[in-house]
Length: 139
Figure 1 (cartoon, one colour):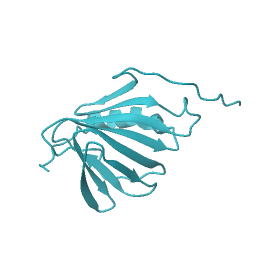
Figure 2: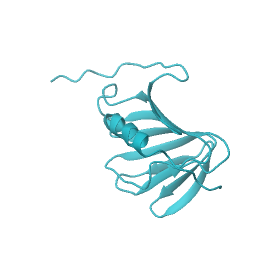
Figure 3: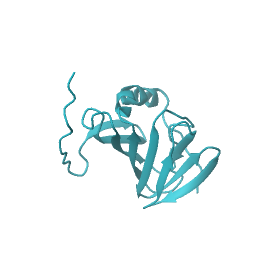
Figure 4: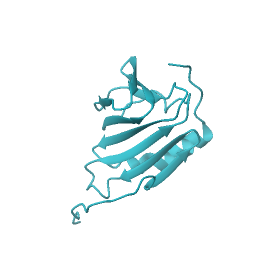
């Protein structure tokens, strides 16, 4: 099977493949099919005082850049609060989580390396429909 070289992508603000999950939403900008499986890029948005997916780990590196608000990240067994412009690299296999403990909406740009993370999104969205995100405390 021939793999086609990636093509340029242009998306306007708010465009992409949306995965609404109640108080959390993901908007995929580029995924494995478009990047030959090398990476996936998505925006994740959390309403105020919204828990994230819960502590987990996986085989991909997760890179986060906070584009709005303050997002609290669990890395290993330690939480940190990351404001707009903060960069977070979580290597494969490291337990992590993220949530919004603030009074304002917060968002991150996420790079998942290697790609194809989006293939799990229908199941993740279905899980959140059955298990809505809970409330967090304050920062």
